[in-house]
Length: 169
Image 1 (tube, rainbow, N blue to C red):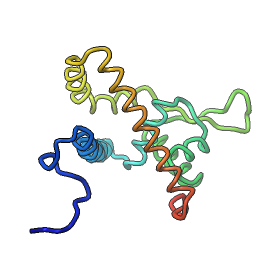
Image 2: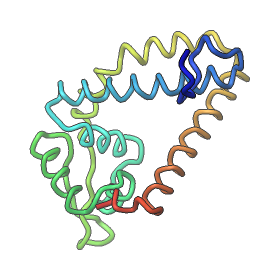
Image 3: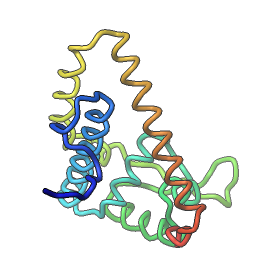
C-alpha cells in the first residue's frame, strides 16, 4: 500500500465536484500546453512566440515593453521574439502616432488566420459542448473561467515578485 499523499486526487478517488473540476482543469491545462507546443512546431515558431501572438490577438497592438510585462520576459528577449515574428510575417512594427519615439507591434491578419485554423476543430467541439448549457450555466462557467484566469495571473505576479524573482531574468 502506497502511503504517499497524491499531489491531486484522481477522478475515481473522490466524489467531491470541486475536486473533480480541479483535476479536470489540471488535465485541460496540460492538454492545451501540448496543443500549443504542437501548433508552434507546425508554424515553425517557439511556444513563447505563439503565446505572444495570442496576447497581441486578445490585447491588440502593444509596445515591446507591454508585451514583456504580459509575457514575463525581458525587453531584450521580447525584441528578439518580435524580430523572429516579423521575419516570419506574423507581426509588423509601426511608429506610435502619438509618440514617434515609441514603436508599436501588431499581429498580421494573415498570421492570426493561419493560427486560428489550427484551433477550428477544438473551437467547433467546444461550441457544441457549450450548446448543452443554459444561459445561466454559461454565465457561471464564464465567471469561473475569468476568476481562474485572475488567479493564475496573481500566481504569476507572486512568483515574479517573490523570492523567485530571478524568473524574470
